[in-house]
Length: 402
Ligand code: NAI
Image (tube, rainbow, N blue to C red; front, side, top):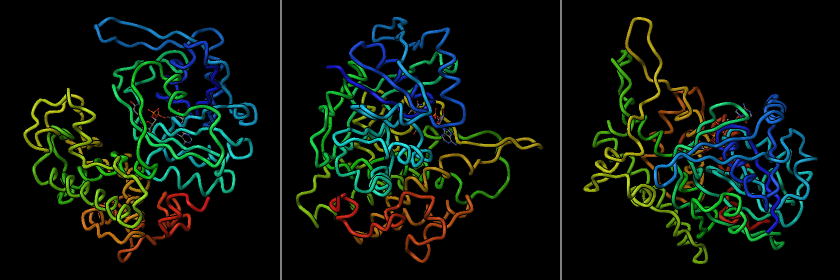
């Protein structure tokens, strides 16, 4: 099918999606970047060059995608009209300005895809788009299909790895989507990863794993830190200890309990896509895990996590200290755990472990989200907790008011 693909963003993932999609002549590819002069720089880079993506295929052979996306712009009125699918490939903290920019130009039947949308993506959309959200189909994934890095801005990127399977969830608008959402995203991504969709859209918000993996492991390693520099940055996953693994498992258990409580209140909601972290890890990384004897050993022996270390800053006098300003707390708490906690509050599920981590993390980043057991802190305006949008019922977070 002839497919009009609009990609939002200008970073690693946006380069790769634009390059792969444009390598299929059936796709008409536009990119919208609202960040500084990024669109202008990327356009200029492509005047004298193709966009080249380097990767190694399954047989170990070096391969490339070589293409040229049709349009790179910062102008939504040029980019948005006529699009069949619009794909968010930009970190969550930057999403609001894209929803605002899309809104005036959105047409019923468009399909908007979060890749990843991260936790609370749809709440922000329902709030900003208002009535316009009625005609839109939302399709959220909880990750990016590749591990990838830009190597030369605008011109070249490395695809370090492709996911094999890529699972999301769809919420159809009241208007039939212009294209089949699953076929369309697959056509824009090429044969790998193999895309699928099941369960309610809310399931993607609840299983956005960065939201709880990073803050849980940060808490486990540093909550009783004595403030003295350590000799080197500890391994993030390989260095996990039993207590931290248990905490992460308990946090994930609280999220599964939230999903169960929602389904108990409304039997029509399918949250079978909300799984415990040990099952998610096995789904994602079955071939990368050497020892599946326990959750701790799965995390420690996952080759995909090899060598990843805690974010740190160097100390003048030697050694390193944890960097609490890194995205593992600054983004993953307000755009992750706080969203989960807000949903728990609506359905009345106690979350003692999530609360403990938010209380610790919000202090370190100088914010206030959870106060006296409620998501009412003065900084909830910077989060995507449902309460921030005035959504305080299950119907509201499911988009049933649309
Ligand atoms: P990135 O870090 O490359 O994104 C940078 C882009 O974000 C910039 O080029 C700009 O377009 C935008 N941006 C940055 N600061 C901004 C600001 N202050 N205001 C407005 N826009 C701003 O992101 P990447 O690597 O493409 O990842 C996209 C999403 O996918 C993220 O949520 C990331 O966590 C996730 N992800 C990335 C993976 C990877 O291998 N790159 C792997 C798995 C998930």
